[in-house]
Image 1 (tube, helix red, strand yellow):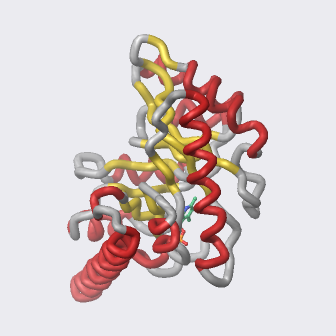
Image 2 (tube, protein in one colour; image 1 turned 90 degrees about the horizontal axis):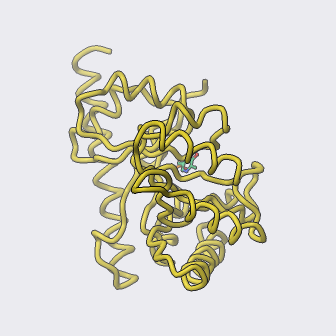
Length: 242
Ligand SMILES: *Cc1c(COP(=O)(O)O)cnc(C)c1O
């Protein structure tokens, strides 16, 4: 890209980021919540490292990626930057080794097999790896643990910690089907919050994080208690076709 078009792109990204932050602040105000109660993860999958750099320069620190290979390549390219990475995509057990210890939060723990593998890798890497359990609330793809298996998976995950190493279960994530209006997603968000409250009570674990809400519905998610929203398109524009 020419210098002029690079600057133009950086300005566009800065404006988009400010607009999303403004909408988040308004949603917090409507819900009587403080702005610092909700973390924005900028979802950069399929977008180039140069875009991430521009958004980081505009003050954004947390970035989300869905594919291990793409994410790790970008981490290498952007090493030295003050960026915290989130893994938000479906995670195959065989990829667990590559991602453990390289993400501030893995949002997509969805099976006991994956939990045990991440535990093993966390001990090998001598890290405490923060994770969320992804719950299937009618997800389009077959992602997330089924609701009736949630308690068992949460119990196992909480047990996978030894001498400060292993898994640190922080809360729940969901990815409801794409609806035409955010109001259609709202009941799923309210429901995830109820599931979290119930689980936290039963297991005596705080489980503070609720990762829910994307470009089409992050304001509704904030009003229903999201502590993390994952926003891609509203910041970076439409994803290039791969
Ligand atoms: C791609 C993706 C997002 C971002 O979606 P947008 O609609 O572009 O904001 C959020 N969460 C997950 C799990 C994703 O895969």
